[in-house]
Length: 139
Image (tube, rainbow, N blue to C red; front, top):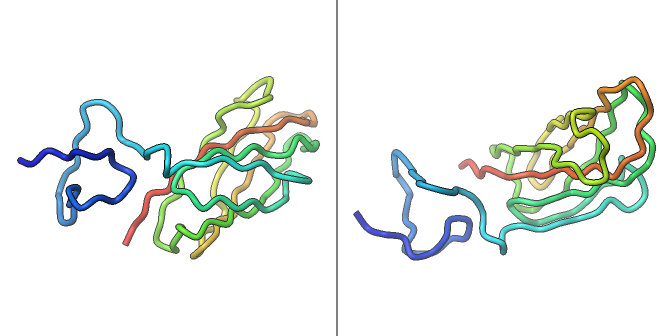
């Protein structure tokens, strides 16, 4: 068995895992720092953002989101294909209660995804929610 000399997340010739049936990790499995990025929404929670990275942190605008209400925005990302899987989670930020929100992908197409954040409480929230994402590329 050969040993990889580079971390997973950036393509290198010595990481030929094409056709592999299994990938094992004794510790971590993820993206290198070069494959990650951050972006902040400019004007509202519905404002589109662009981050052309395989993993990232989206800091949402702190505009009010009424209780039991959802808002959607577009993540533009030239790495996304229509066959990919986008994993999301609320990681906190300036949020009093991270369980007050849920986040999910409403739709996905080549070059973009529509992400929806829902306020699960009955009260309005005005917080800069941080959403983490990781893209699993599928052929």
